Each structure stands twice: as structure tokens, then as C-alpha cells.
Length: 552
Image (tube, rainbow, N blue to C red):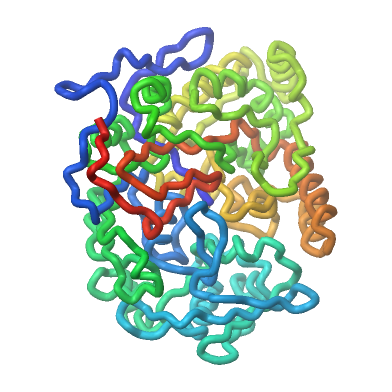
């Protein structure tokens, strides 16, 4: 899913050797507090306070777009499948499923459970939900992730009625789903919020107001009690949740943390129990030294990259895109800008995807940096750019600390090959709205897998994908490989074909991969049950609090 940046830019970056060096830890101080640890939380043992990055744009699972929304929505709703404490797929609204011999039809048995208003959850709710997201008038950007479902793509483009999609209720507790091809990742696919069920009786009664606290009904462990925009969202335990007896946290507050420095101060002051992926990069070394118990840095299936709008001149020219990719010093970006253990990326798909061969890579991976810069200048000259006609373009970015540091570093690296770059920051929601409407030259983007399969990265670049294919990339060879992978029964052979598709994408330089991420979480020792994992999903239902633990 879309990966947001982490905070508003509040400190200057110093330039050294042509790259950004983050401000040192010595500039960071807290008056009246111990230089180590965090203050004990003033909250009770049943209330959890989570710092959560960006302000949500919506809590509708069929309209959401990013991790910051997924964290909240996943506490409120259950898909047919959900995540276990370690982020792995497990049964959610379904208690079991069976697959046909050809792997194209799945039959789910719906768990005997209720919406938070006491109404039973039925298979009909899921039929309604899949038809809802398929409706082209609904314009759900994530509908493309569900294209493997029979007729989902055709319905979402208005070619067939939504009642023709391959989802039907056999009875109240039995749901059948038909697919165009085998989906070996089905368990993980159905944990995604696009596949969540919503209460038909509530949505039809209240329309757009169905998400208001006084109206909403959910089937997850928590329901919405209050939403104060740009301040907090309060969820309370759902007594009708099927496993309510094992839910220890009664109330959870989600706070937007657009300013990572301010969020860190609030964490140390005991206002937050955890910060989820909301840490300023320039404080990582300080945090390693002063908050080693709280700082959790874990390999993350996150890919961060420069996205080109390949239909917009001059970025329709492969030489221009290649030159800009060559000029990026990925090692410097990881060691001196990010500093949390990120890995330089010469491919798009990160490590951590089961069985994936990881054979795709940029052709210049082994080329020394000096030679890359010389080649980049040569390519720009061949494309008609030079001292008298410098390449000039806008670079779109989220207005936050991390992205600002990255963008300034990229700006300096591109200046080294004669390119003039204007940084164009905007808030998270506006940034991704512009990307979906393809209103940019070059931008900073990122992707966290919705499920641990390379298809979840590569589908973004299929010609049939519209909103999510930010750079309007289209290559018949790439599309053919993706189609071939969908129709290949052998699992290992399928992954090799997907690696060929990734190589095609890299050869076309539709994007310039920069680094593979790590999770950046701060978790109080008082929080029990947190299991770091490479999708960075930790549902509140599995957590508890021990306020007796000393945190200073």
C-alpha cells in the first residue's frame, strides 16, 4: 500500500560533500527530563495511545489508501482473513475455506459473529461489499488489487454489471468466490482493507454518514467513538467482537503525528505508548544510544523510489530517466540521510518475499559512482541538455522531515549532472491525489506490500491499472509477462516470470529505486505483545499494558 513519509520538516539539513547530513544528536534536548528513556504514561492500564503518522483522509475501508489509515481501519473491521500477532494471515470473518481442484473457486464459511450493533454478519454483507467496491461510480482506487476475482476488472470499468462479479452467497454463512486464475496469495490478499466487509444495512440507511460514530457498525475488535480531525481518533472495545474476551485494551487513541520531532517529545513525556513508523531520521543515532529498549528497527518490505511520469516530456525519453537514476548515490542516501539500516535498492521488489529469486537489478549496479555520473551527463547531452539548456523539472514530495531530507539530497545529486530541480511539497492527501491524477513531472513514492508476493508490487505498473499506476507506464511485454504469471500453475516458474517482469520495468526505468526500508517504531516497555514484523502490522487486540513497568 501507499507509504507515507514521517513528519513535517522542522530542522535544517547541512550539506557536506554534495549530500545531506542530518543534524547531530547534540542539537536535540529535552528540558527538565532525563536524557534517557521515557516518562511513565499517565494513562490507565486499559487505554493505549498510538502516534500514527498522517491524518486519515477516510476510515471507509473501500476508500482508504495508506498505512496510516490501515492501522486504524484494521482495528475496526475484519476481512474474511486478518492478521495474527506477528502479521501473518489467519482467519477473520471466515472460520474456514476450501478450494476447488483447479484453484479457481474458493468457498468460505462465515464465522458466527455480529456487527457492533448486534446484527449478524452474513455472506450477503460480503457480496454487497465486493459489489460496492466494484461499482465504477464509487471510484475506489484499490479495486485493482481485486482484479483476480472473476469480472472484477470488467465491472469496475463499467463493462458488465456489478452483480456479475465472481462473488455470491450460497446461504447466510457460505460465500463463494471465483477467480480468473490461481491466487496462491489468497490468504494475504483477503487481509487487505479493499476486501473488508461493511454492514449493508447501515451503509444503505445512512449513506455517506454511515461512518459517523453514532451510526457506524463494525465487525472488528474496536468501534469508532470519536474523531476530532487533526487531533485524535478514539476507538472503544466492541462487545460484540467474536473474541472480545481476549481483548485486553478497552480504549485506543490514534494521534496524527505529522511533526516527528514533536511526536518524539510527546512519546518521551509519556503521552504516547508507541510511535508507529513516525521517527525523524536525523535522530536515529541518538535514539540508538538513549532509547535502545524502545527503538525497534526491523527489515520492512518497503520499497522507496523516484517515480517518473513517463508520458510527460521530457520523461518520455529513456535517456533522461536513466541519467537521473544513474546520478542517485544510493549508498550515501542510506548511510548519511536515512541512517536506520536501510539498504540501497537497485531493484524494485525488496527482500523478504517468500521464494522470490531476486534476480532483477539495474544494469549499472556494479558501476563505480564516478562513471555513473559521467554516463548520466553524456545521456543528458545526447537528449539535448547541457550548460546552455539545463534539464529543469519539478519534484513532487510530501511535506515531512524524512522526505524533505531525501529530496534535498536528490536535488543536490541531480545538480551534479546539470539538472535544475524545484522541490514542490504538499500534504500527504494532496500529494497522493496529484499522483493518482498524474499531475507531476517526477515524484517521491513508496510501496509497502499488501501481501508478501511480488504481484503486489508489480500490478501497479500494468496498463489496465489507472489511478495507482502513477507514472502511466505501459509496455506490452510487461503486461504479457504479468498475464503469463497469472496463468502459470508451477509456483517456482511463476516467480521466475515475475522476476522477468520486474527486469523489464527496471530496463524501462519507469522508476528509479533508491532504498529498501526498515520499520521505525518506538514502543514503550509497558506495551506487551508487540511483535516486530516485516509488514509492520500490530493490531491492538493482541496488545496489553503493564503500567507497573518503569520506563525511565
